[in-house]
Image 1 (cartoon, helix red, strand yellow):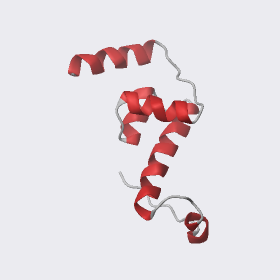
Image 2 (tube, helix red, strand yellow):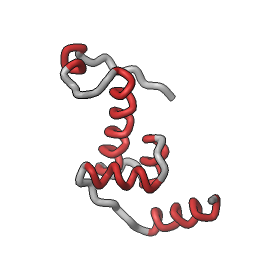
Image 3 (spheres, helix red, strand yellow):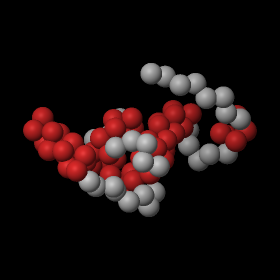
Image 4 (cartoon, rainbow, N blue to C red):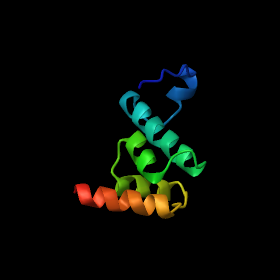
Amino acid sequence: MSIILDLDEQALASLPLGPGERERHMQIELSCRFYANGWLSLGQGAQMAALDHYAFGVALAERGIPRQYGMTEALEDVAHARRQ
């Protein structure tokens, strides 16, 4: 699914990111925020951010967002490990 956001061009120009980096950064930022709000599991957040579980964990840590690790996440980790 694609989502189109109508954002102020001057505000975007002030970001320290190039045009190609903006979209990618927003994708990761939104995924982290949604995870922090409890709207996504770790696996869903990683998938939305197009990152593996480890890289998504690093993105969370960079933003000071603690991992919520419960039974659901443990089962996701086991399922992920079996696919590897």
